[in-house]
Image (cartoon, rainbow, N blue to C red; front, top):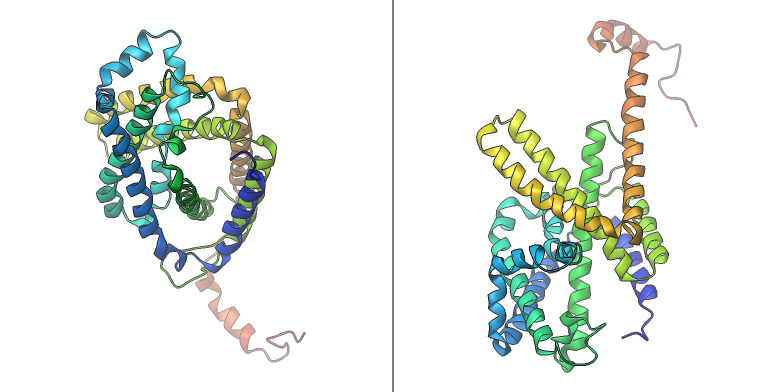
Length: 341
């Protein structure tokens, strides 16, 4: 729907999301589960209908075709950068792991994966049906597989799912900053508990920073293609960092040297291929993600080493050695205990 003011709608949705963070998400969170059930059920139904129309698409599950595409098709390797966003989405689950729970994610992940794969197969089936037709360029198979009467409800459900995924990432950002402050790699900022729900926190400064950053990205890029480039490049680096940090933990903390190396090599090789393929997006939005990442890294680096310099000139003493002096000072009537305002 090109006539819709997409940028204005996106700005309004983002503003509403960040505004309601201060009130907590425990009430809104009650609809997250049912909404996700509706979302993934929609994905499955839309996909399976198209698969029935073109069942030959099930052959796409054979990894041999993917290997042939990457090795034999001219420029096939660079298509990894175009299809990489199909591998993302799990970070929305794991970013809010503390609220969702590890067991819940493990149980639901199989269902989520199945619904996603079926929907992708359905989109591919629709594309195969129209591969020789006119007007395919510029079409979005995800919305094309929806019946005309379901288009507006489908857009509403997709928007709701995007809002929920955004909420998970925002909550995860609060948790990350809280942990960073505990590790002395981020400046001390105010942390609030907007509700009595255990583990839920709200950081006003981070909320404002995220809101300004999101609006800046929307106005800077202006279209989704460049934002996808920045997002894809960022997720690739995030996946690689997760693999290396987890491998470091398993090697040097858990001493699992026998089986960690094969896992590191397999996932590292796959993610390195994705990174190389995504490098072509550097000038189409990936550079913005790099500069933003360097900005956050600079804050953490400067704060950490500035704190170490500050600690050189600060000495800590045992308060129990001064209990007598503090007690006499507290009982001294010459000076008031509280300064009147």
